[in-house]
Image (cartoon, rainbow, N blue to C red; front, side, top):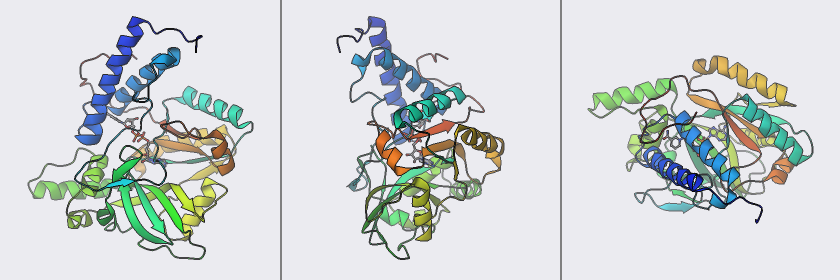
Length: 335
Ligand code: NAD
């Protein structure tokens, strides 16, 4: 609008520099699977970009890294268009950002919702399409609209049921979840890599991503991957009133849901959940990089809606990094 300030030359230049930097890091992370900076460094670049865009909205274009779901798809696999888009999550990097999110939610919703807390598993997002209870396709997130068809690979994961069981199975259900390695499974797969003269994987997330993208599903089958459900996309005949009810229904049909999610009435409960798992995060059998907080009631989720990149009704609280990687590309980090 006319009220928006014209971006200064300095802001334009920094914006362009940060956009290039973030694009490069996304390429290294999602495509090469070999990031050159720690996630916390990446998150700070993104924050700085968002701050510039908040000051100068004219700089927000649809191709800005702040507006896109990161990632893409490889032509080694058939392309799959998701029936409903797969989004990313916004982050809260500290308590103040979590408080600000809760304040905004309660203002925009006009009421205090219940909050569902669960662990943020560091794996790979998958979209499982069930028709009348039968698994018909599995795909990676890709750029959020189009992913890769990895059905044959996902069928080798024991946690993923081929058929749902029970009454009232929905005509269509896109189940969203995370495929990951436990720490023990990760050690096992890396020992096998080394024994076979191959390079070990840098972390469990890379191992999951590499293992799901095998051309030969027998290789995937030989690796002890797990899956946990954390949401749903398109649906017909599935009308839960809350996220927690959706998990209970999906669990009853045989889908693997976490035993660690909890629903709280207020921010105080959310804070205690975050503090609790902050203390015991290293005692969990898989890597976590934070806690995801979601508005539980579907009616309030709908009212809040989504941006082009993430739902407004959810946030990923990220624990502070424990060791900072120092290798940077070519620009300074503004702390
Ligand atoms: P994200 O990984 O921060 O959050 C979204 C994803 O979380 C979802 O797609 C889902 O797969 C996963 N998830 C795990 N548990 C979940 C749960 N309980 N509920 C819902 N979702 C859950 O977002 P992203 O867009 O995949 O990646 C962005 C992040 O990736 C950045 O914040 C940064 O940490 C990292 N990254 C790092 C680099 C780098 O160079 N180091 C580059 C790009 C991205």
